[in-house]
Image (cartoon, rainbow, N blue to C red):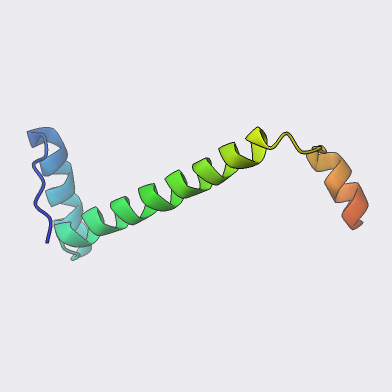
Length: 70
């Protein structure tokens, strides 16, 4: 269980969204937290890769190697 306090403006936006869509405020809070954690995990993985200083290639080079054309 988690309780959070939101600024009034944010609470109003969340309440409005929930009413418009028929979903609960908890649903949207849960989805926002889930998305943030996924994004944060991806960011930290990316930083770890950069810190290893492995060779990198451009997107164009990767597409060429994989046989994709633009």
